[in-house]
Image 1: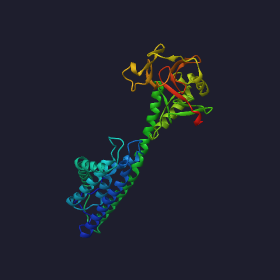
Image 2: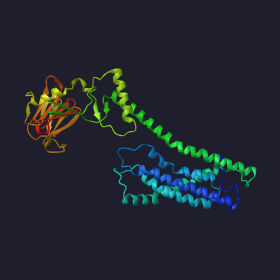
Image 3: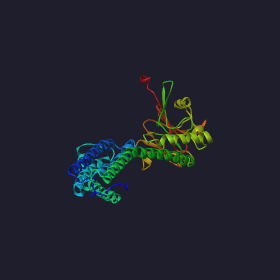
Length: 378
């Protein structure tokens, strides 16, 4: 950047040189502004969830680069250049106002949003861009204060011209490469965060597995079972979203810990029931019918009805309440049967009539549910 010349210092004072400089500068700002608008569109159209690739959120911050690139070749007066810079600053401010991360999700691109972008450009983004452009102009003038003017054809003028193009080429390469380098760094940070979170969750006994939160299985085409935990490890399932590598790194680290230390004792894996055994619970007579609430299943574990608590969301719900918290169950339509079965002492079964069945760990965690498939759908 030390080769940038001050604005008043010109390579060639002839009208032809000034005209070429003006055309080159305006072309760079025009092309840069158009490209900037195109690169902002993915972020402008982002609905907020799931997150888009970081690259499209990096580009909106690179509006300053066409200013720098055009500054290298511009030999016009400060006043002439400043008019073009102000127009460019407000134009890019308009697109930047729509590309920022939305405060309201989902973000709907319509006439109201365009009006909002125009207002925020006039009140905030436009003035901010102008202020940044002003400081950038002063900085580049300071960097180029030592450059010497030269006349067309002499050695000094030729050296300055070559220096300008060398600086321009270097800045252009940096402009193209920098977003991808920043993106790579951001993705690396997400992977590191995933592995760090996995270590913390393992230590605090709350590790999970990221993938689709349901594992549906069938028994003789009569019973459908949806599990909410990972069958091999007994760890709770959590929905996997587009998170730029966080979930994959998290799962990889959990897999490494299990390979190294085995399935943890605090996992409910050893207490789980097979799908065939769970289907038999529909016909079990070992679950007593619950007629009064609250119903104490064991020390620290009880069933409560929505009518007996003030935090229930509906008047037909029943909840299982434990020392570590509470978990909801389905509505109370029909008779309710609940309790434990000897072979699975750490599990609590809640059957609604003879059609649906919920399975909880004694710590209150919901493990899964089963439902009988009507004959007409088999």
